[in-house]
Picture (tube, rainbow, N blue to C red):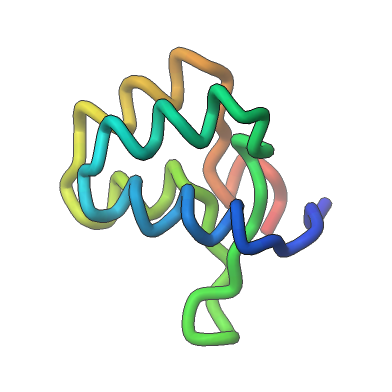
Length: 77
């Protein structure tokens, strides 16, 4: 299941990868789809959780999981 690619979803993925906790929390407070899929480099489907884990942002990953985030693998990507 791929969710629609949006600029907000991309912002969530990038903020998660960069460890920007305030930005992640702000985006989620604005109802950004926590499991939106961003096509990294237009070929690798990633969720914000994937991005946080891949870049070693454990605190962000924990926040996302606590709010129900799924990895691409869990979404069947």
